[in-house]
Image (cartoon, rainbow, N blue to C red; front, side, top):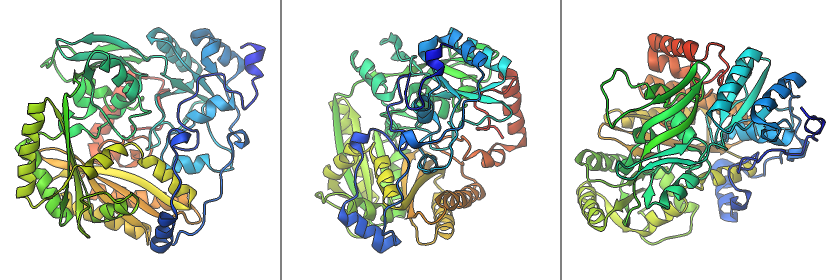
Length: 541
């Protein structure tokens, strides 16, 4: 290392920083403040009457000292170049974790905080392979980093048995690497964010159409590594359904997976890495299915008298295959809170009702046909049309909920989410069991729920919990998370539908996949990453 690099002051960033604020979600310019009416609602409903104590400024945060030796740093710089290695606190702190509520509570603490010992920004597969070999030789853990949006502890800088850990930031792998309009396929660099990928495709009149709530900041590699599911999944499928091939650099070598639109050439090895969360290898490029930009769009919102009626209606739509791009349903509590927190718009649901949103995309003829078929199915199932205004309002704010979570934290309220999925038959019981578990663990808290993704055989339930922070909010949420996770497991549902496993859901993995399943994952890990350096402490029990 050069003396200038080693002597960089704690507050001086030497690398491009992730776009999100280090101790909050997203762009600080988009942060929102709670209105007096909402603060009054918090006080009346939850007893939240005072702001939380302010956290430290970035310059005040005390990080664990860098554990890498000068020789380690020189070796890392020899691979990626001095300009692509960062050791300052300003480089390390933004990559110290994800954006869950526990992550942000830890960031707001004035206690010493953990962070990766260094950040490396490789420029391609050769550099990644060299970094993995170097880190395996020197016993340095590696945490792949994309957009930093994990909400399940997937980016925790855990060292495990290793003396040090580095963050491997993939932002330089940000190109449109290939395009086949005839086949409807594109090859995207793993470091491309959702908006950057869509902008590159739009230049060719194409769209990927993957819009999770993290869309503005999450990356293509992250979508693949976590088996992400976007809000348009009813029309375009989950991200793993979009993947046609991928390239992965592992300590054991490079894999180039996926040939043809379908194959019977043994087990599909792509599935090993879709959802692998950086524990088996570093995804560098993804070949995905793309489609023409929609020529037409339509929106319609609906009210149902209760959640059960609405769920049955969504099941009918999905099993009949009427073709909405988006369809989702809020329960009574979520509908009430959403109305309280937004300006009055035309066609609101009646008191006690449940709001559903539908969006349709395609050619003008396709949109008209899909809209008509879906409308007929929903009306037959007991829906009342609210027109397009509530659906347009939902779409306008579809990526902004985390900003509200941060504002609630500032106001002294604990706000966090979790999700799961099961078949339609067990959906009502699962919702009741998880709601009861969260309510018992957090007395007085408000538990909201919506159906976020639908399938012919079942659906995903997404829960939001709002309560008082209390004296020890980290332990309060940990206890509630344990209770909810146990309720999900007891109901036979999946511990996660689209947030991934990370550290938060790892305690339930053995029950979900079984003892033999755990042994399979461990065997694959031992073959591909024999030194165990890749994202230790995540996913694999």
